[in-house]
Image (cartoon, rainbow over all chains, first blue to last red; front, side, top):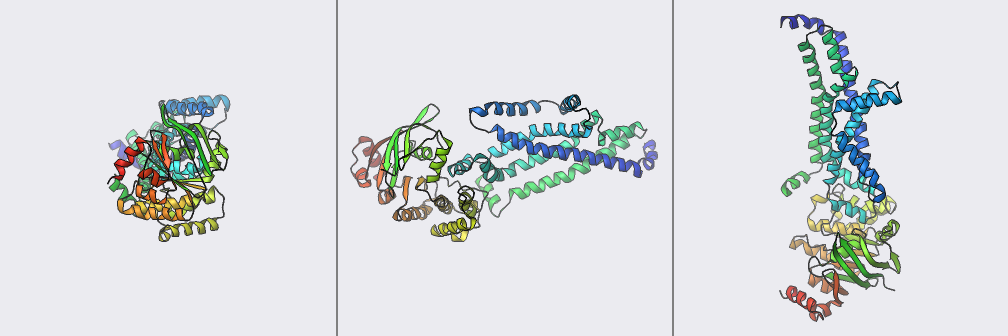
Length: 237
Length: 245
């Protein structure tokens, strides 16, 4: 305990804090970039997965297999797979790129199911009304189904991204200078593990808590977009 | 040449044959009512016409033009000429009333926005909802929503309006406001096929009544003929039961 107290002034220097801040930024940047791109691509995947007709069957099989496979592989394995795969095709790719691609691949698999569930929560009669008026599939999705599915999709999608902020700690394994990696480094420099990782735990909390709050706020706002809607929904349920 | 001719129309849900060869025809400006017990395939006829339920046989012609339901372009043409109003209204919950009515005319039929909006306002005024343009569907009563649905279908300027049990989901006191709207369309010469259980209303507005049972047409004729002197036993039994009270 005394050792920790004695280290505090030496540990909380501007240099160390700048390092931590930089790593925290990197963690956040990786997560947000990976999750956002992944979320966007997940929409494409869900759209392709719902293509009707026999000719689209191979496409559907690929999409379903992708989701089922990557949801069953530990994230750390995905990271190593991407690392070794990328290194064979483009050896100069940065570790940051590799990390973002890994997050992306994982986020697609998880959010695709969230999106699919959200779209399926919209009654099929809405789609039928659109089809009967000659709406195409994409237009039905964009103008009718998706706007109604947001309240179902967004909360779990944000929760996924928020929880992923901490899961990105795993990319420290391949040497990305993110928060956990920095922690190990400082620990190796002789700082107390309790002090270092306590601070780092605090950093993770400070990053994900505001995002959770944002998620909760959006959830509330989406659930009550207009006057009587929410009250009626509750009454109907 | 009849306006719409349906010949030996067949449809299946999996192995279950729900339409076993339905034939009828109608002229422009006519109101045809499909009546019969639940599960007789009345609604399925309307759904197949607009390509929501796959057709497994038979033919449908509008103005002598055959609709090929296996061909996407042909189905689009059919939907261009027929608009359907559903039992559960199916208004787009995410759009205001005015947008529900203008979305297809502007986005699908590519009509100018101002023109589509003026048309929608006229139609909504006609169904008595001029003051609800900016409301959302779930802020309206069932009867109001159904009138919006009718306005939405009319905004497509269909050749034929299909009405699928449009009053069945409504509270009894809201039924008349919807029937009034349909009555008015009938007097204006709108060509309509309506599936309905409102026999008094059918008798009043229909030019022809088609009685269906288990996926086939049992008997058709003028309303008086069918209601008062049905020729078939099945029709006699059905109308005997429902018209007694």
